[in-house]
Image 1 (cartoon, rainbow, N blue to C red):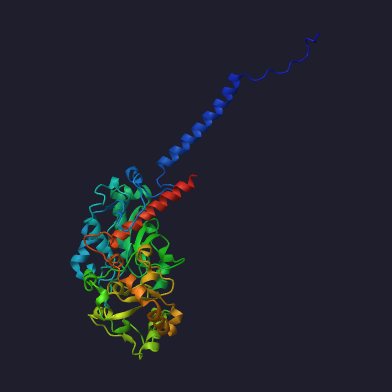
Image 2: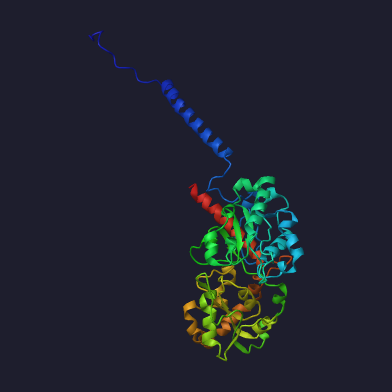
Length: 425
């Protein structure tokens, strides 16, 4: 018989007790989840991993892009006061025609584009039309950039305070054109451009810029698309059949070539490449090298087999576009340059790249091309679709430069979405 005074072992927890205990923990977790969701909802800055915005109806239509597929990206164009854009064109006609005029051409093409977003709520991206390369106030005839940062800051402040879309992403879905030498660093001298850097208020946005190099560079530390320099539309109409033109000039260059290069703050124009061209080939009858200006120089390019495209202060120049449009093989002498729309133009198939240190071997390189694959390069170069991809038509046409810009922006949007999805896996 069991001793009644013996202590009994405690009873096993009942099912109801266990449920009460678990309910308490579940309630705490729900409260924590609610607090975190509320914080993220009211936070003024979106999480860094958030993708560029894309409405649901466009996400469902995502598709592979081809040469004839209309880019589905929807872009809204801000209607800014004329002092940011149209007044500059009215003050000087060069604003819409010079080598930096992509900012005008893209704006005008987007305004006439039937596929742009008429309502900002339907937009994937927002285009901010500010003409920063139209201040022709300097004695040398090139546009001044002294006002660029202030003018852009004023435009951003206007957009930020009068509409809600900038604040929603801190400007990450806003697009600007920066078509000067070193993009949004806004200075023609590389060392000064690097020291100044990109304005802080643009560092989350997307830039369309003519400047691009392989590897790291302060002036491309931002989401960007490399675009071609602007060339007047009539150049593209000058040679409808480049294959039928007689080319009696072997290698052509007309432009600034200093006999005695000046030291400008420790730097030399073109890194002395143009001076070396003149020294090595100035008396070579196969090379047509001219230092003086000639308004009809494009007729000389149209007669040439090879058009030399050496760097200036920046690695790019309008000669890249002019030579392609006129059926002359571009010989690019600018180390590490990144060229526009590489997936469409396939630059290695239509051009030559010669290292800056190999100027002395240039004639040998060109002779080898003539003896081996000149015909193949010319056939690729004379493809009308490749030439069209470098032209800013107004209005925009399928396959032209502005169309290619929209295609590149669509790719950026898709990449942003994929990165966001991977971050949540």
